[in-house]
Length: 197
Image (spheres, rainbow, N blue to C red):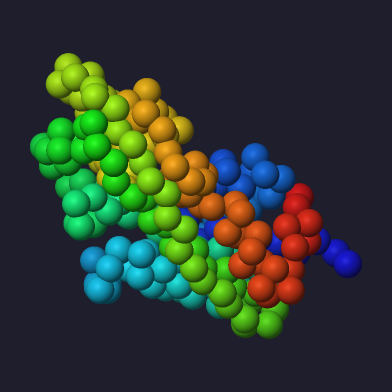
């Protein structure tokens, strides 16, 4: 059977790099979904709904490709933290989080463009933040990375030294859980090998 093409409904370079490192060659189609228009009773549901909307927004333009959409939000003290509006907001968040733990939720939606079948789920990973100093925090904020990512941090970029560890799938914190992706594909009757480049 010929290889199927994979479309990532996200402009996230971290998600694209994760897929490429795992043997995929995804095309990228940014969904343009307005994330602020969504509401849900909890963070895990919110990210799943956003992932479904992102994948659904691009599947019509991708032929028979398999489309994966994702969205990530950090839950901390019962609140949801997406991308900070500015450095002041990021500083406030990260000061509160240091020395403590939050849960990074990533919603995933996979749609088989050939059949229209879709599956979605959320993966959740505990993130344990280190006791970084204010000077370290200021230096990190000066890089601009915090404004680009959910929760104002990464574990695959400049914030990595300030995260003591994760409990669960680290790829999920980066933006896409490859084990969950494999399970969702299997639910659609597909394998990762069908999509390997």
